[in-house]
Amino acid sequence: MVGELDAILCPRHPRADDLTGAAHCCGHNVQIANMFAVAMGLQAVMDELAGDVVLFAVPAEEMIEIDYRNKLREQGKLKYMGGKQQLIYEGAFDDIDMAMQMH
Image (cartoon, rainbow, N blue to C red):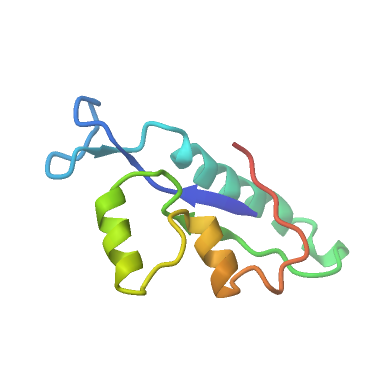
């Protein structure tokens, strides 16, 4: 079960971080809550299921801080700009047969 971790730069949002201007106002907070709700629901039936369920919080899904990410690419620390693409490249999804997410 995938949930995205990220914020957007929206300094005028009433709950924006005073230092960075970042705010969770695009739904990622709901995705993480949904991921945990699924986990809570699955606890009751896991003994009846074959396989494992992985809760996977994926960072860096919004295309923000492009200059910073480009520097990471230039340093060879990052190949892709998006979190899921980078994690796939790094092999984090290699043992996962199915990924589900709400958006």
